[in-house]
Image 1: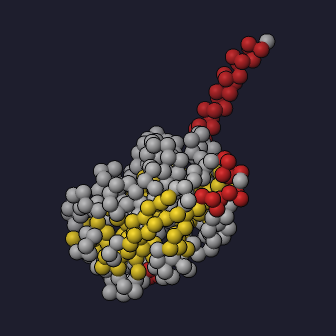
Image 2: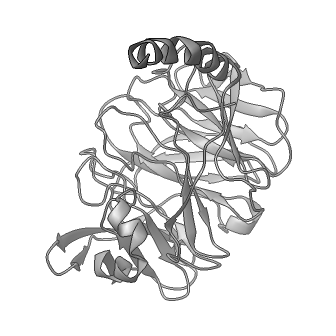
Image 3: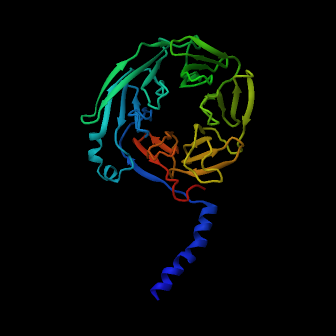
Length: 344
């Protein structure tokens, strides 16, 4: 009797599993870090230790402090013992009130550097940081600041942005830059502040620059996200807009995501996608470059102030990016688990 039960159980469950795989399931994980941040903090996740794994981190604008959680946030021991969180937090000051954090891989070696743009100076500040993993003490060595070309009067409130570092010209150099929404100008410069390219007239009010490596070639593309309209791509070789991606389900308040290979089900699980995070609903809507979309629930219910912070947090080494959100109202970080069927 037991033998029949053992053999029949998988057969009975198979139709259920196939149905779930077709319609999708919703998964959410809460309480990864129940109190790591507060209202006004800005998520600055990245691979600060050069381990191939994203670290949870936030920038505290009031005092210019960087706070990095130097432990695997999916470690069940850490999750179950919140009183030990402070043992794994690395904190250092680099910046001041009014600075805009723009961490990134400025050397092209896969390691995130803390950096900020100071609008009052028009300069980008990058630091080399060494970490003592035993004492959780960071030693900060600022580099000479870089004078970035850009709008005459930089205003992040109006939509001006500092561009993330990347290989925009396909020649292996990591470039930086700014975007001025009033004129739709992109200023792409090397790290001496010398302007390499200027794009004119690519952008308008409410546009959000989301440059990145959308096709997996290693080269960054100038891309704009236009609310309710979609993603607009610029071709640097032709010096003109050459592609528009218009998913059907955009609403006001959607936050665009950087291009990446997200952990998600679907016919092309290794394909690079972009998408949006919808804070109020607690969902990520991932979209491939031909417009196929898939909605994935991350946190139920969502909150209007949630901020996306995707990254390779589990360090699986498979190049996949996890969908994570930071909730400033209570300092919690939430991550979706797409490794089991997942998605809807």
